[in-house]
Amino acid sequence: MMNQKPALITEPIPYKTLFPWLNLFRVFRLAVDFQKILLAIAAILLLMLGNQVFNQLPFAPGQVSRTRSSLVHQRIVFPPRNSDLFLHSPQQGLTPIPEQSPGLVDYIQGATLLEPMSYFTRPVLTLFETGASWSSLAYATTQLLWAIIIWAVFGGAITRIAAIQFAQDDHIGVRASLGFSLKRILSLVSAPLLPFAGMGFFWVLCLLIGLLGNIPSAGGVIVSLFWGLAFLFAFVMSLILLVTLAGWPLMMTTISVEDSDGFDGLSRIFSYIFGRIWYFLWLVFVTLCYGSACLFLVELLMQLVSHLAFWGVSWGMGSEQAFDLFNQGQTNLATSISRGWGSLLNITFSGFVISFFWSANTVIYFLLRKCDDGTPIDHVYYAEEDSDAANELPLAGVAKAGEPVIERPVTPDTTGDDKKQESKEPNDSE
Image 1 (cartoon, one colour):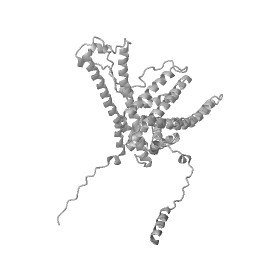
Image 2 (image 1 turned 180 degrees about the vertical axis):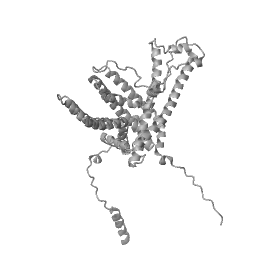
Image 3 (image 1 turned 120 degrees about the horizontal axis):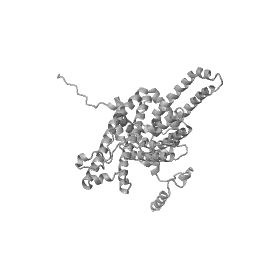
Image 4 (image 1 turned 120 degrees about the vertical axis):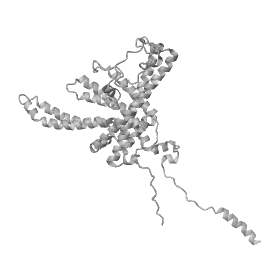
């Protein structure tokens, strides 16, 4: 009997099954979506409009930022600097004064994947500043509520589209996603606000300890004895605050995926983060590393588009005339339109950052849910029966009334047989 060699197993290794976090590398494909970027741009514009309105309120600070730098990444330079290297022509002072190249810290602050979180974290941290005035607290609270409402609508819509694409490889439109988030606006808004109710309880306890300090003579001694309780209350508030700041995007993602309420979104994220803290930190680390590379490539591409567009037009128009369209001392129609195109490039770049941010949080939620309770990654609430019912014809008559239909029993038709029998009888008699 001849020796036979065993057949080689050529089945591919299921890497994504062995290492589910590899699904994070699908985020870029999810983020490069025109509908998500369009929703992100609409959210940015509404946030800018809200800030302009809030700056006119009586309790607005005296010195407020009225530029777009806090909301839109000013990373795409248009017109590009040092274009004379390609045009081979002097610019005679019309080129803007070159600014100092940004360092690493400036780059991280100017364009980072965590920048969308600042819409929520910045006003929250203002609320916890020691000695903050009532006007500052009112202004920060107004900004916080407006940011939560905006991201509840548009962030919920983006995560809904990303969840359907990631889990079922299907697609829903902007109208359907906005309709989903608007119907669940109370749940999306309440999810990040509920933790502040718990923090308020412990804050009241600390406040009572502070009121004891107003007792004459013995107030200072009493407060010094209760510092331990104050530390304990502050420890609980710190845990709630850290999880809220880190997990509020995941709370909204929970509602978009599960179609649940705000309390479910809050409880799930607190359970996932506390129960799988190291896995959560690993997912965040991989997302930041991968996202930084994606962000660099997109910025490089858009900067190249800006440069080549200006370079090509300058050959026909002339470098001096082209740069004159962006002269800071002019306010004519051509200058305003040209600067508007530069703003469009920057706001599109910011839209991609926000789309990547919410898409990444959607994938992170799926991975945390699978790791914690074993729910399959492809499980997402998707009411297919709603779309099927929408295509059916409306009911009418008895079916619409819902009344039971009484059916008569079917009796056999014997008239034909009787006639045949009668015709046969005369024949038999003959």
